[in-house]
Length: 132
Image 1 (tube, helix red, strand yellow):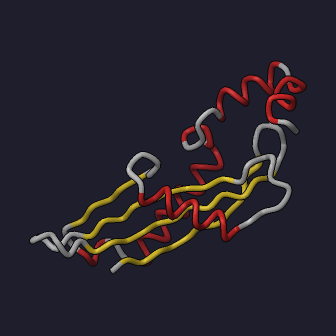
Image 2: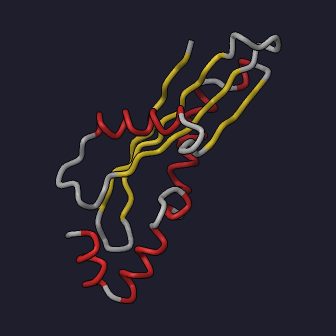
């Protein structure tokens, strides 16, 4: 059995464009474990600057998919006390991650820091690269 929680927010990127991002936390009870473990997996999706409109439902599906894959998961918490990973803790964690994301999007987005450097050195070249 699993429980899914989302945190939807926005940030302004280096070019001044406001983009939506969605964190997804998937809480999974590990019924195969003798220790009765609980696992919390976290993923994030971010609106592409090329997207004309926000598609929150698509963003939720993407963030869920990223949470469930080891390669794209941005955090895993494991507890042998099922009560430790609860709604209050998950919501606080997602709130903290959202605030950290706003300050450090390059930690989560591959190529973000390079794009920021390009934008700062030659914004026209950045816009050409992005097709904007």
